[in-house]
Structure formats: structure tokens, C-alpha cells
Amino acid sequence: MPGPKDLDPSSSPRALLGAELRHAREKAGWSQEDLGQRLFSSGSFIGQLEAGTRRMQPEYARLLDEALGTEGFFLRNCGAAAKSNYENHFTEAAEAEAQATAIRQYAPLLIPGLLQTPAYARAVNRAYDPTAPEETVEEWTDGRMERIRLLDNPTKPVLWVVLDEAALRRETGGRAVMAEALHHIAGLARRNRAIVQVLPLSAGAHPAMQGALKLMEFEDAPPLVYYEGVGTGRLEDDPATVVQQRFRFDLLVASALSREKSLALIEALAQDYAHEEHP
Image (cartoon, rainbow, N blue to C red; front, side, top):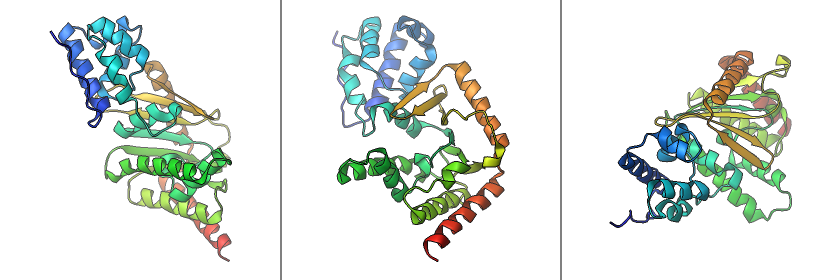
């Protein structure tokens, strides 16, 4: 009996690959936990592969083909599902972000990508690599703006961001760029498209002083936490870890200014940047 046909790369490879995995697993009569054990992984990881929130790496594709008897189908097609416009360390996180129903994020050093303006993103990308060709910086900036299109949906995902006051006061790209960036954030907050709070410098020590934090929830897959550093990133689906980091985010929210006071501070800083740029 012939195996399943190869995927059409012009369709949605990640979704189709996940659907084929679910079909093959159910045909074998296994639960997600059963298949996860055969891959020395978890049932939640299998669920994320089926939902398309995690990328299928070649080593897992090979194991799936062996376990399910799919004659190399997943290994042949995981390449089509892996195509991305993002850096390798951020690819999985960006693709999971696009499918999330809720995103909670703490940003300690800069305005996070989903809240950036093109000018701010361009300044950040240029700072990342001062020697990159201009067209490369523009390509990176366009990719970031493409991510932001998920906010075109008026209700999904729910976006809740805690911004460190230090990120708002770090002059990135010049005062005019900062004024525009903060007015943009204030606009999202006033349109109720994002919940934005500021963690003030006066809050002192807090539970996320070691770095950024992003939590993502999904309709049909377990939640994820994303850790990001300089040139590196990692998704984590361990339930205990996710619960711990959600508690950490809740503590940040409790230490942050209210939405109203946060908006007032953001708009006041935006006015300061604008007035100092144009006396």
C-alpha cells in the first residue's frame, strides 16, 4: 500500500504535517503520550507538533517515520515546513507566536517586536549588526513588521506586555523615533488592542531581573515559555516550568503601575521626547 503523498509547499506545510501526524498516530491507535514515549519526549510535545506550534526537526521526523511506519514521509517533508524568514534561534518562537491565543511578555531592555514601529525596529536591527548592508537591515525590519500583522485581528491574540521603565528611557534611534514609538504603544493601549503596564525603576528588585520572559497560550496545544538571549532562544513546554514562569509574570504585574498610570507615563515620556527634539 503506498504511503501518504508529499506535502505541497505552496499550502500550509506546518499545518498539513501536523494533520498527517495526528492521522498516522490515531491510525496506529496511540495517544499523544504513547507516541511521545517512543520519541523519548512528552505527549504535550506531540500535541504541539500536531497543532503546528512546534517545528518538526529532522531527528524527530526520522523517529516518527520509524515508529509509525510512514516510509520516510515526515523526514522528506519536514524541510518544507521548516522554511522561515527568521533567524534560526527565533523561528519556532515567531511561528508559535502567530498561532497563539494569548501572549504575555516582560521586556526589560527594549520595546518588544510586536510593539515596535518601523523606525524603532530599524534602529534596533542596525545596532544588532553595525556592519550589515542597508538592504539586509531593511529585510530584517520588513520581517519584524510582517510579524506585527497578527495584531490586525482586533481580538486575538490577547497581548499583555510589562515594559521595564528602563526600556522606555533607553534612547534608541533618536528622540523623534522614541516619541513615535511611545505614541504607537499608547495608541495600542487606548484602542484596547494591548494591555500595557510599566514596571517602574522605583519597584527595585523583581523576579525577572535575569532577563526577558514570554509566555504563549494556544487553543489546541499546551502553553509555551520562550527564553531569549543575545543571538539565542529556546522554547520550553515543561508544565512545571510554564506554571513557574506564569507565576513570575503575575508577580511582575503586581509590581507594575496600573494600566492608567502606565499609559500616563508612556504619553508623558513621548511628549518629553517630542518636545526635546523640536524645541
